[in-house]
Length: 489
Image (cartoon, rainbow, N blue to C red; front, side, top):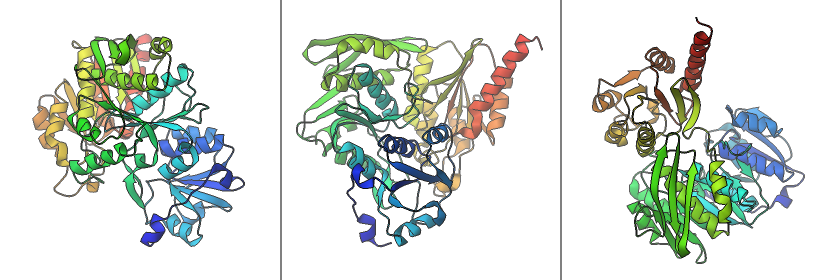
């Protein structure tokens, strides 16, 4: 494939696609499945293909009645296809790509499709940063909806507040998670550069995605490219507690409002109090804005994300009187501090955290909420960054709040360069051999956790994948234990 072919840009409108079929390569991803839903909501015919589709996206695609073929062979492209959207799971080596070129079918990456079909006529709120994007995007979608702003949105996770993680919306605002990962194999730029931002929430800037970013400087450069897209009449809501965010924010051509806990922030959070699985805090903002909020979330980092969401909501004209009720009814995103089981003094939490900063903040929040309970953590190094040795020391620090740490083998270690792989034995020693163990299989982790279970234990499973279905195995074990207890076995 020539560079000219790879760089071609196709401009399309929904009206251009009537009568044809839009095919999504890699439809099983959260973003791609949501795009399928947005397209179907516009009355367009959609098909898709993927190697495997897992829950909950499997059920979503089935509910949309979108035909899906398995794999990426030439046969996955049917007839009368007017556009192919190429997900970033697809590589140049996939046979379907050559078929796509041979048949001269028009194609776009996922973010290009979002830009041209849905973001060209709206004021777009882009939630970006290394941490917290999905949760803040979901919260914004929830409070904007409850406040009557009727936003469109696309959440990069399975929302527990909405039946589906997307909506076209009828208002002026579209809320979208600004992913810094690359767009497609033929378009090695961050997705968020296509999202035409009117407002950006920037939560954090830190090294991640070691498979596509060689160093921290390249990550900073990516976020700078996003900030430079903001128009002069736009707004940047920047985390004033993050030095690199402040550095990037200096490039903004639009007004910048900082949020945080210090006096030099325009939007400030104070009086944070934790109350078990819930917390409360106070907000102060420009022009004398003041509000106290309570919600069913733990952690200061979540409260700071809420602060940014409120600032964006007020910028777009949201009513303050709706906010307290909106926060009380907010349930969050699946696998973000998601309580799977909470009975007889034992709690099981499923969490997506895998970057050491996210692991550290999540466990600190849980420890602060439950200082007297035994905190048991199961962790799977699965992402392209966690497989590597880049954060070897940081991971040891991130688990210090835990009483027991069950470490799974590195998932697909061959994806990390030899000599640059996470050393589990060293990590176990650095955490403390008296509380850390390494296991070859998720089932063995579950067996040992259940065997050692005590009243009051709080179990947190942390992975950005399915972790060998560890959560389901633990849940079944806990429920069987309850049944045996109830029947006096």
